[in-house]
Image (tube, rainbow, N blue to C red; front, side):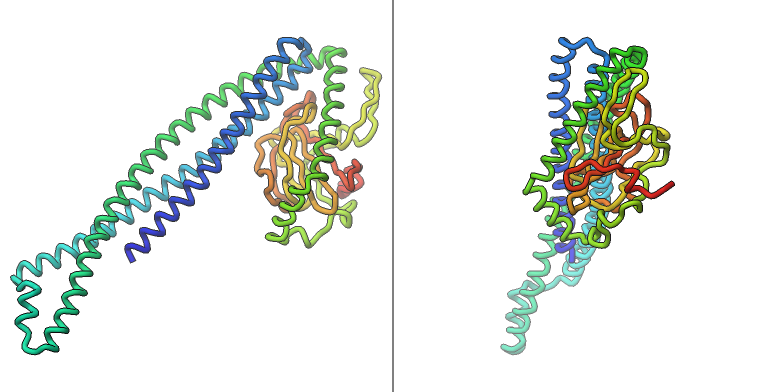
Length: 388
């Protein structure tokens, strides 16, 4: 029983370490992306004096830093769970060790008090050959049990030592993570202040506003390319098919049959409709591939239907963006989001909170940019969402 418990504890520790390793890999990947983005932006900022370009670059850095904080928080939660589990295992192992020690000690005391004969003397003093054989077998069993108990005690002592070392390492890592988080938040707040100063310049200058809108149209092209790549990615299609097969939640409702019935992804009012939009201030027309919903900062962003999260990325003019594949060639896009609650390749259900409303990549404050794509075409979201 003690050995089986020891094996289970070791397996559980391996599972924790595997999960922590995966999370640590995600954080390192994000740090590498931040470093590469920082170098690119520094190079661009030396050549570019436009506030609109600088604010988009700042938005991209802020988006990556926010994702890093989120990943650090995830790793910290895993570490807390690991620490709690390890502490519990140490207590359990020490209780088992005490029980074995008491049992083993009692047996040795009993043997000493009785002044037992040696095993050979016991066998030789047998009154018959049958008794001698019986005693030989019995004494071997007792000897084996004593040796097994001794080995178990030794294994437990080694395991407790390992568990305590793991605990110390986890506590040190938790302290480092806390410091990393604080440094990241300081950098995040600093960049947010810079972004706000640049936004004021954009709002006050027609030239800057025009440059910003040009950048946003480049973002539209970037988004179109991402959607096209998603549709052409055979490996991704096969991977998502496997996920759908494992979890059949998507089979109950199909996107094309729900026109006019989809729930709204966020609370708020539509400030920019789908299609061509006239800007009276700049006297220009731009194409909006979705709708923009103005809402309270930090309000919930929910999926309109179940699907698979295919992409979480930064798109110029749309900030941090999530793309969900609903099957049958239908996708939904959620832009300007913050505090992401999901991961790429994760399955989500209709109504799940995937993020919160933010101002990432926005010059109009907190809002959600929402798009619906079907069979490679942009669709008017208001024709698919239910009437308010």
